[in-house]
Image (cartoon, rainbow, N blue to C red; front, side, top):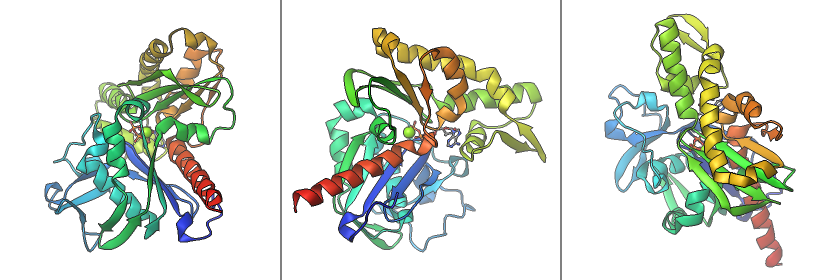
Length: 330
Ligand SMILES: Nc1ncnc2c1ncn2[C@@H]1O[C@H](COP(=O)(O)OP(=O)(O)OP(=O)(O)O)[C@@H](O)[C@H]1O
Ligand SMILES: [Mg+2]
């Protein structure tokens, strides 16, 4: 990933602020960092909550915030779950936290994303994101963002995807929403995109309920989500490790069907002409096999790390843009 970074003018950062977790990366070093999307004003965090890791908090309009923690640790604060998420203080706090954790003091180009329907229709939100250009003080450190580009979220996953010819349905199963976009030879088909409100959060909810019903032990959807995000299929309760797979098997087929029904409504007759489905977002880990059974014989491709595929692609798109600009200026 270290893409020819010659000077600070070439530093590209990419941040994918999801409802479940933030994914962030920069072209000056390898790897993608991910942290949970819990954030709240500091005075709403629990008294005994150890937010004091930093000498100074993140200031949002003169109000101190903590960001990047498991929501379960911040019970007083509900995460905002609505279409204008990118304009909220919650989003701003998470983005600032990501910039801080990436460690760069000067970012020539920051790449952000919006789900397809917002990207196509919500100019206000697009402008809002561009407003992150400028000088930020984060935990007492100065960070300068020279320029911001906003891309359509699934373009991230497709950028990292070699086979882009033909008709590809990109289905991003996130925490809160599943976003579907039809791509034809690498371009968005403007008639084929939609957002479905069934996603990993519903899988976690259903697994938690099923687990409780069959074992008599309470677990929260947040705990299940945390286990999945850690790449696991087990959960520890009362000093015992429980396998979540059988509970997932019990609830996932119906949820995969709900999502697929919504995708079919979006794609209408195009669905029979699909060459490929690119299944991405962290939910691809959970629903892949159930999905494959539903969509057969259409082949399903899953990026090697689907939760991080969008941000990986944002970085590639940003690095290509910087390169083009450099060439254009000789
Ligand atoms: N190995 C894994 N890594 C990350 N997430 C996983 C993994 N396995 C399962 N998941 C589940 O996938 C969910 C969605 O992950 P993702 O990062 O794509 O969501 P998001 O981008 O935060 O949400 P949204 O796109 O709705 O804003 C996680 O919250 C988790 O429940
Ligand atoms: Mg996402």
